[in-house]
Length: 256
Image (cartoon, rainbow, N blue to C red; front, side):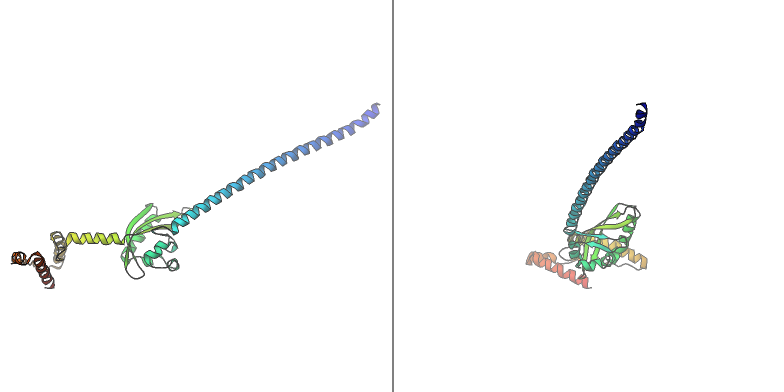
């Protein structure tokens, strides 16, 4: 019996070790299956989150595109070199060119020559980080040749490496406002009836003329004219005729 028991011990040990190894493998496989399940769940959550982020980005891009394309003011994306990258319909209407024509050119080509230097200086300051945004009143040249005054607001977008990527132009047509300002300025300096300078306009223009006379070393001459008999015209023919006499006298002064 002892020898039989001794002979069975190795068999029992082998069976036990085999069973123990099998159970460890089963536990390891179960652990790996659980780990794989968790990994799949995390991957699914990650995919769902990426899809959500992608959907939000698409919705945000769509809102930006609609706000950009249908804005009441001109909007454009402009490269650091000045080329139009994207323009909306309001900008096309403002300058009278089609979208394709603008995209084949740059903003310098449509800027009034007297404003171009100031524009380029402002953009340079933006790229150097001296200012976050800039706003300036400037002139664009319409396709038909007329001047279009605009309030130009510009900001700079940088890439992940902090390099200038593109400018955002917001261009508001202020031509009517500038015309109104010019009319008010004219009314403040010029007599509405005769078209001659009033006291304020006379003093302003006189300073300019005197400065030019000093530079050219010329001798100034002042002519003072008084209108006789105007009261008689007003009293006998009425103030309408008196006004006509003033206008006629002003025309004679201008001619001579």
